[in-house]
Image 1 (cartoon, rainbow, N blue to C red):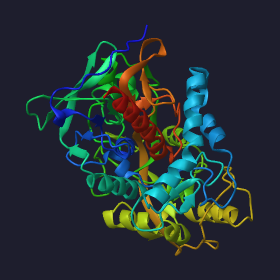
Image 2: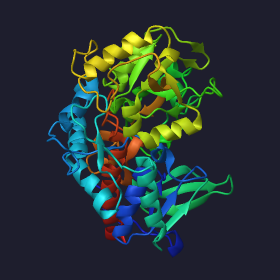
Image 3: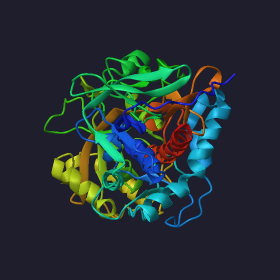
Image 4: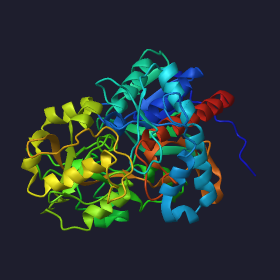
Length: 472
């Protein structure tokens, strides 16, 4: 029989409210919803600065159908279901429910950000694994992750109901009976404190946890570089109160992380945004194209890692990402940033080696409709170069596969409730974002991480607010 005892708040009114753990986009979305219901929010972030990995996201956020799309799009659910891969046979109903919520809510998510929050998402691109252009970003200089995170965070800071604490690590989830009642945490390594109220976990994945969860579930990836800071995953905090885990062994290795020529052997890499390939960029190995750049991240990564690595520690490859002036103009804000950082440079086709001219000319012919692409690429976006010459200008960066995203985590339902034994929701506890598992399966589509954060973060905020107001 369900426990019907109401949550009793502590005596100190300063410690009542909803608690959000993690300040990436999922946490900010949850906090925004909670504030809209006049629920006080305590947002705890373990890093010095808020924003998590969301603030680094540079390709965009998926949505369909939206007013910004030039062509009809009813394929988002199917594309996402296909990307899940063979694990779809396990927990199929759960996965399909979550994917349905993700894709069916995507149009509303874009509207919420663009119309209610005033964020420019008017530019739409097609990324790898997608059958339609549906990844939204702005037309200005600010990358979409930074634009979205900064806008939401600034709005939250204007509310007297919002309190942000950084450099604060949650050490325990508090539970009485079958109900979560708050968290224990410490700031800057000081004394432990407690906060009481419903809890929303948006603490991210474990792709940087080489010595912990990543090393345990995927020891084969221990030698790969990563786009994530070396921080421990937080899933154990949730399994300690009964949460289930799913897909923990499913870790996405992104095919393109920049190898910084100034520090090529650092294990922490800067992501080469998927939009660079989506807008027409190509990949070359030994001066030749070798695969369809619009395939899924998993398939491109596998094509690269089947070849010998160039370096052993970290384990990395020497792949060239090549763009022409048309791609540069379409993704100028990204590329100018990479040029400034020294991660890309301006060159000529002759600089790419003796095989490059023929390979790029073949690509240009396919882009111009003069031939069928031998690797099956069907969209070339803004590639403009037609007659390729040794002196033709290109933009080049060295890239390599990098550990990027963990698809596994705690099991949630379509209400963002964390599920315990026998799939019973743990009262007072929700989760959203990369800390959860089951949505993406074997391969996450580019642009769906930000969408997942907004959709399930808002859902978590809605239900945590209802729980808070009913309990109090």
